[in-house]
Length: 450
Image 1: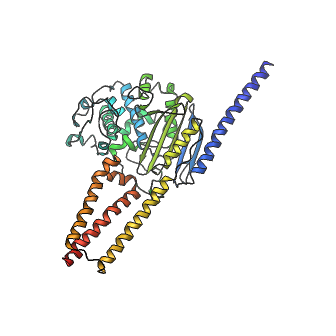
Image 2: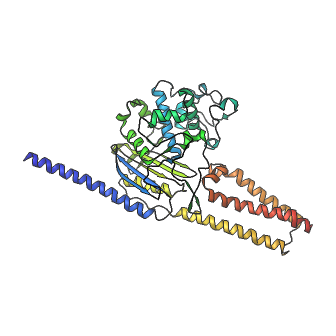
Image 3: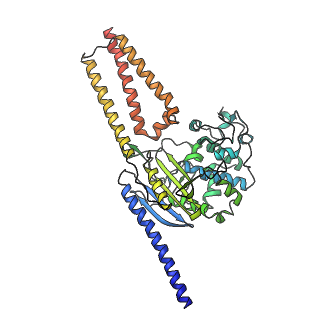
């Protein structure tokens, strides 16, 4: 009788687990199939892991489902942080060691910046400085590269790619291996991340795309730089990152690689609070569910990883295109589903922005042609003074935009142009075509009319 009762209970439990899994599957299938019709994404990969095992796997797009690596953007920082912790585990590095003792070639106004500060983004290096190109370790001795700390290290947080680019050089200097070699032997191989790479050769990478007015076009990874690999250009497949998530969800499996104290340190916010940036992970909460996450994007890719420690669940989302907000909305919807919420519909705003930019480009071009025709058919005859004034005004507007853009958007204009090519083209056209017209007025029409 007891055996029959036990079997009945086990059957009921298994049935409930299956129904729960099916419920999540159905919810996500319905959500993704509905939302992904709103905006064209070339490829999208999603893997959900629970207690070390995949429970949901979906691939969208013609190149999906082939376990190909993607550029994972700033998700790279989590792997770089893990690699740094491996050096600390080996006794070759200390979290509170000042980085200038390792790389004295980098000039700095504050020699109190430590490895911990770099990992936490509390070094005082600004976000805008993160767009500077760091020399390679071999070239560092011949360069005059310098960084400036904007505040007392450890006193506040400001995200900057340069922190992790510097960590990449430190890993090379201490290990006496290339960054690629060290990650391969100390991170990728132990975690069985078979398609992951931190090197320059990307032969098997999934085709990359950029948006041109909501239409994705195959494109090269234009903003790639070898010294930025630790901060944003590691490549990995969805299965690779699923294994990395599993390792973070099951810390006992990492004991051979990382002491539990170091593992805990990686997941502790810089200010010791419940929320905030830790070391390659950012702590947050939704609907009472705590999580760790990192998002990443390059000119041609988007990536997101989340782990929900209390439910031993995590997920990865990868795309071979970088939308302004749509892919992030999808990632948020998946997270909401895992936090026992109804996923919010993705916004159509991005379509409006990109098509609006396309119409502005068309208007700017037609307006330029119309004014040009009027000039050369003598329907307008600007004086030399008027042509000069027009030229100066338009040049000043362009200069204000070029130099003011970094302060408004917190990103250099050229970097923005690389990341969002269609929007950059529209901005250049709106400012550049009036300058061209003014030059024509000044050098040709203005001279005739003076």
